[in-house]
Image 1 (cartoon, rainbow, N blue to C red):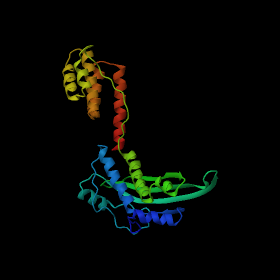
Image 2: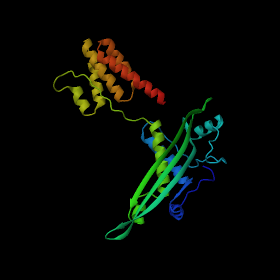
Image 3: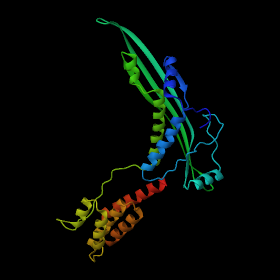
Length: 294
């Protein structure tokens, strides 16, 4: 942020729009909205379980550029120094952030047979946001990724009283904060892992009272793994192959894709099943997808 940003008071900002008849389009640079973006994004990325996040107390670069100009990339020494100071593997910088509030208001008079002249009021508030992020890592090629975002949030209200009309709209300040949160959500959706429903099956060794099934129903993966490890010692290739397949599943559930592939291959070579071949392809696809996000 530069000196163009202010932490606008909610009531003063709202009054400014009212005095303009709630019919104007202005760029509003609010430091609280910008800071909300950073803090909300940090919380979202941490909650994803994939990232540990550090948000410095002193986090603003001193820059004299206008808000609409994207700064030059940070130098190798800057990236290295910041990552070393905060003991991080990477650095994310919100290089540009701006919001434009577009308000519109109209009133329509019509005749009611019982009440006489009646007014109908309509108002809209559009909040356009633009944000630009860079992700850096220490090394020769420090710039890893750039993320540009631009979108508009829209609110609309209609009522027969002005009080009712504006009670249904957020204040301009609230709209700015909402834009900051929306930016954080948009960026997080590009960086954090998401849950994708997948169906998996495993082999039973008994038609009734199967121990592996019992442990899996209890979400007791450790005991299930121990049970199937014992079964994998069988000299019967079919039994051993089934146990190894199940151990591949356990390792996938525990997040160890390499170990899952290892047991999948053991199962494949112990006794061929098309099911095992298909599962190995799914595991390889998962591994490739994870590598792309690193």
